[in-house]
Amino acid sequence: MPRYEEQNLAAILASPTYQLAEQDVEFLARDEQRPVRMQLELLKVEKYLEDENVHSTIVVFGGTQIVERPAAEIRLAGARKQLAQTPDDPAARRALERAERVAAKSYYYDAAREFARLVADSCQNGGQCEYVVTTGGGPGIMEAANRGAYEAGSKSIGLNITLPHEQVPNPYITPRLCFQFHYFALRKMHFLMRAKALIVFPGGFGTLDELFDALTLRQTQRMQEIPIVLYGRDYWQRVIDFQFLADEGVIADEHLQLVHYAETPQEAWEIIKTHAPEN
Image (cartoon, rainbow, N blue to C red; front, side, top):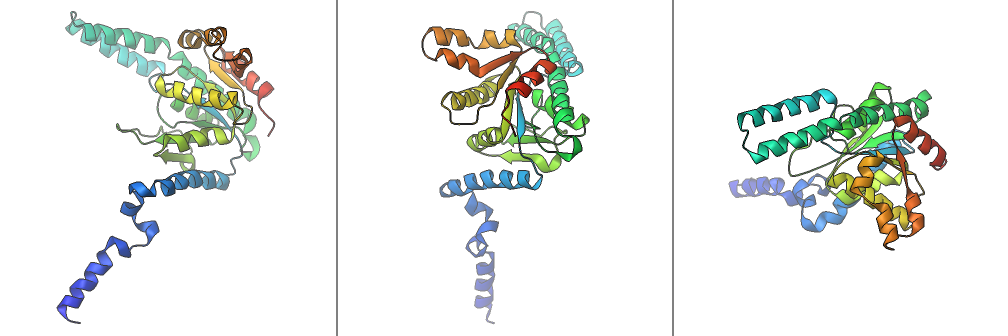
């Protein structure tokens, strides 16, 4: 074969257009392929959960910053040290105040861990895959819940998300049930599609976003009737004044019944057992 033909054949074989479409990552990443990528994110998780015989879930939301007490104490000690070195620095004083508040909430980590143990012990014995603990797969409260299920010897799910800053899955998720999403919308769908209940521990914007997504779907009857349990009444009534919304007429009085409050893992679990839909 003449050299020109050899070079051209090599160029043909190396061209991305010659790749199978399913193997052409650059093509799949193009803007116009967004519907395909969204469908893949929907179907991939659906099929793997089916393979693992997962029928229903209990979803746990909560803040990434709420860590177990030893980790919180380390952060607190660092903040105190920094302020001692720069006592006139407002930012250092603010950092200490924030570290103190986070440390004061570390018991929520223990509560989420214990709650997940209760769920796993009660609902996944004998190889059953109902009420599988599901989190966003990250640190903080999410880690605590996955950890509780792991320590009980049960499967748990992590629905991670790609973010501008690196987010590594926590190490307690069942490996074949750890997924990574690009689209928040598809991730939210998978949080709620199989959910029998939702428990929300203290958190920030992400936790609020997930909570209000579920509340809106319940309010508009666009999803199954599941209990939504807010853990820690004092925190949540400070963050969201639902009664004010009802008094102002912007939500109906009956919408106040969409949320329950719990102060202990056992209380949260009892609410769910009472109000969750049948499998």
